[in-house]
Amino acid sequence: MMGCWMLNESVSVILALLWLGVNLYLFIDTFRWYGEEESFFYTRVILGSTLAWARASAVCLNFNCMLILLPISRNLISFIRGASICCRGPWRRQLDKNLKFHKLVAYGIAINATIHIAAHLCNLERYHLSQSAEAEGLLAALSKLGDTPNESYINPIRTPHTNTTTELLSTIAGITGLLISLALILIMTSSTEFIRQISYELFWYTHHMFIIFFISLSIHGAGRIVRGQTPESLLLHNVTFCRDHYAEWQAAARCPVPQFSGKEPSAWKWVLGPVVLYACERVIRFWRFQQEVVITKVVSHPSGVLELHMKKRNFKMAPGQYVLLQCPSISSLEWHPFTLTSAPQEDFFSVHIRTAGDWTRALHTAFEAEGQTIKEPRSLPRLAVDGPFGAALTDVFHYPVSVCIAAGIGVTPFAALLKSIWYKCCESQTQLKLSKVYFYWICRDPSAFEWFADLLLSLETRMSERGNTHLLSYHIFLTSWDENQAIHIALHWDENTDVITGLKQKTFYGRPNWNNEFRQIAYHHPSSSIGVFSCGPKALSKTLQRMCRLYSSADPRGVHFYYNKESF
Image: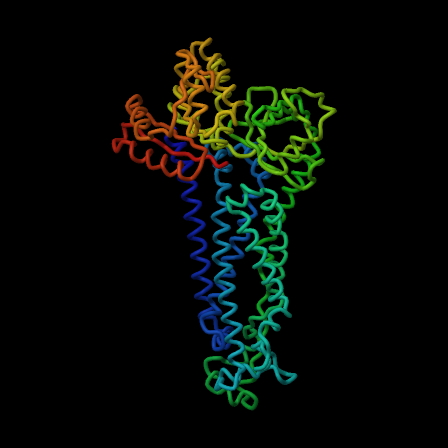
């Protein structure tokens, strides 16, 4: 088990370091090449070191654009994960976990794009200055090349009176560069957590501007503005000798006028492979879209949560995974992610959808879900299901002790997990490595997730009947209440059941004291490897990471906490 955990954590770190190392290598190697290459000597006379900065950042930008599409191809990853014989165990789970690599690569694109834009703006200014009256010597001679028919230019700015902005926007490189910049800015800003929460539709539609981004990137270099000396010219025109005799270029046989051409564009070569993979992923998604999804049950909870039970041919899932849902009657383009709340052992898969935006509100309206209802499948709107994806919580079963911590809506991934634990306990032939689960649920208003409280009550009753109450220890913390709730609790106090949830375990008021909780867990399991899984806000995540480090023993034989975060 320790080997599996080390592999899972190490692969993420190794991937990040490998990505950083390749970026640094490409940048340094390209920077050095453009700083020393003989064919670009005259170009460096005009542009200086900004040439190397522009080209090195361009190579790194192309490399990251090649990588950015790979994690998006979730269907291909799911096929590899499910079909490949060699893709088992921790490697299989690792494919899902490293979808976060997408964000790291996006930062790489933003950084290199910024450097590239800044370098090209400097290049444009240097081109313009080299045409001014103050330019002299070799710099002036180079800028005047191209005025006669037998010459090729090196400076795209042809006169000192040229408006650089107008010139820029009249070229392929300038127009596509502007489109790339605008698309990248919109994609990055709309991808923030704040935007995704208040308007997922805005994030969804804006993110698809990556199509404009990649098309523009592929043809960005077609204008070949940055030019170097041609190989044929280098054979006749020795730069080392001729650079000091620029006044004699027209007459000297040893120094004919140098000829220049733009470098062949290469961005399309970097992105062609991932674009083909992405196209294949779209085909797979369309195929999955066509597959029939039978809705077997619809339940509308009073808290504004819609519960859907569905069946689909050859659908296989693991606890903690999610699916993408599309309702063509609402939108033929939008796919929205929802965590699966059913267990793999059940003959259906389910999601719980809370009304939180235009799309979910429209879905509730489309299903006309009022009260608790079960409808005939043919009378319901059609749903398309893509997935499942992601499996971070599967590692719960690879520890002897697991601590699961949910905050608010982050409780959803744990529904399938707790159900799965129950089914595994009921299977006599199943030998569970997991012997103890501590579950913490922190919420402001339990009524908003009363469906989950009902699930806990059902599990509590079943485990009590089977004599497995020792397996699950759960703790519910209510962080917000008013005077009326306090009076209701006081008037309806019951020694056997909790007033709010109806469970035997009493609800705690306030936030957990994580020092006490971790200290108690460490005390009861002194020589165990304990997996900590959380789904909640960043502040909670940072606190739990700190607790894991604080209460892990320095002795290899002591207790060790291993932190795993589930995104939602």
